Length: 487
Length: 95
Image 1: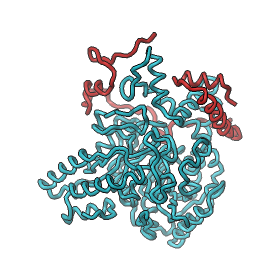
Image 2: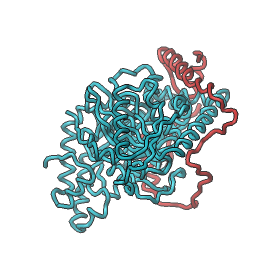
Image 3: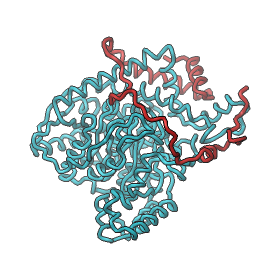
């Protein structure tokens, strides 16, 4: 078959018209992955056999029950799963050497939900090591190249999940966003990246990075697809006490009226080194909304500039705590040459973790130490409160906030290597909302003169995802940038 | 500025064996990172409470019931490459 640039919606339409079997579609994607994956290094594990088995089971069930296509929201939809999602029978490493060879005996509950909804797993997708990074350069499998320019990064940590979308190596992917890890790569790769409210999707079985910040959500081609997948993934889970009740349908505001919508435009997001091409593409998007009757409200969010500093205290603290479990005993790499238990731990951790992980673990252990705890950790959590309050005030004045996702388009591979602070500030415009647990999306907003994608960031108050999808879809329908595939 | 001794102490707490080159690199980078986050001292937080949980949940409980797990006890035990004795993982001696 000829592989069309399927969305979930268009693929399901094709199934309904009996154009293909699931096996045909899955085989076509696998063929494409096996041919093209080397160009970008998107998949770190291609699950041919596993995917075809799933496809075959769906085809057989379909023969028994023709209505299955309607019943299952993701019937026969091929997906890529970020490598920090626990997948039964498929090696799960979060792209860290410390977990090489780990094949979990269970699925993350959100993966189970996706399978139950009919999604097919094509393989595991590249990420920064333990999702710590903004470029996938810290992955033990090497960087994922940007589909629009192979000399540039795809962003991170969900860089593979984003490049998968524009490379058309699957219909949707899963991602995690702790401080921009879905929105940034989506912006760099012309994907639709969803970050949901903290607690919207169960984190159980998704390898923890920073537990008070980690969120789980999909990357797709379109807003409709994003809402469909989030409908499947969201909900309370007894294995994650931080999950929130979900009763709404995230597709409910698609097609909404923009007239009267109040859009807050925070000036700080356009200052501090935001590239003029990026600003002008985002301003164009704002003009579109204005032309549709929305009201633009200029705002100031002065706490924005402290976001990265708060994040690089809170997140390493939680990283250091979460990484304790990788001690080589219950899973992952072991050290056969160790003399005693302490030596075993040291060898496992020193060999298993890459430089960025060591850096974050050490920063975390330093700021959590008795003499630094108040000055760093508690101080950061207090500034976090101020950031949260500032967003709350903003959402008294407007329905959504709009801004760039990042100050620049995709940067060159190696450009920020060796300068951790420069790499950390890459997420300066994505971090503040993550600190406040807010949902947001990156929606494709056009291309720079050099042909690099730029994303428009739409932020809403907690639990307002339906509004966010509706607002995003209006712009997407008017522009259809997602249809512009890499050369 | 982080001292060499502080780097060694944090590395010991983190169970990392660092090479001479790594010690130098992390001393520089950790100092830069901590120097960067020091800007928070510009913010007056004397009247502010810290936030640890962003959606306002507290005291979340569930019933203390035995539930079926996808992975059996043996499945979980079989994940490690370390030797097993009587359904327990055999580790190196502590001392």
